[in-house]
Length: 323
Image (cartoon, rainbow, N blue to C red; front, top):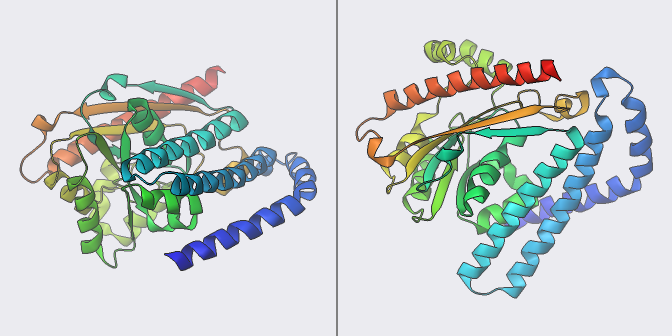
């Protein structure tokens, strides 16, 4: 852990020095590139990257201050959670301003109620903060995350993610039993005032990934045809969490508008610009959850996720056409 953080923070230091040194060149180059359609939002992308670096350093400073200033474990965790909310909100608001995003939320009644296991659609880098801000912060409560191990390369996520009760999982499948055990324990140990978040697809949806799964895993053909805008559920972790559920409801988060923002290329080409992002929640009370094998029940809910994704995407297109 310490070696990894030494490496990642060293990389951040070098990246900061390079970014500051080359700032004039980057500014001019981004302006010139913006005249080409494939790079029209390069200035916004560069501003976001510079802002991200800045927020990384501010976040690390805040975590260091909390570590030095607060010695009570509960108080320290509350402060770390405040930093988590601040970091996610700051990056989201920066992206929202730079790319002129519009956000609309429906199903707000599902945000209220008991703490829950939250299952979210995953299509973009940007949607990773949606549950944190529009569910966790909206309810002013902790939200435990199941995160991919690769995110430990970001120092703020690494340090904050380990200080708070989250789990970083290896998605390679090399030790699925351990991953399932870890997420099951995360759910089992979550107190009554904390919700838990997992992206049950396991990775971001793209058309290419959908097609690759169809080619590599013929056994998933029926599921892929059933859910053309989603990836099949990775059932192991979700089953384990439901089996260990101490009494939390089940909340689903569907969204549309970030499909054109899957990677850095979309940041440069305008995939984020003027997007109308629509978010929709729905909730199933704990008493209505299946007590036996939840597979068919989860598949039925994923049918609803597919229907909501189609509806929201259509509303996004209609909104874009009228503007």
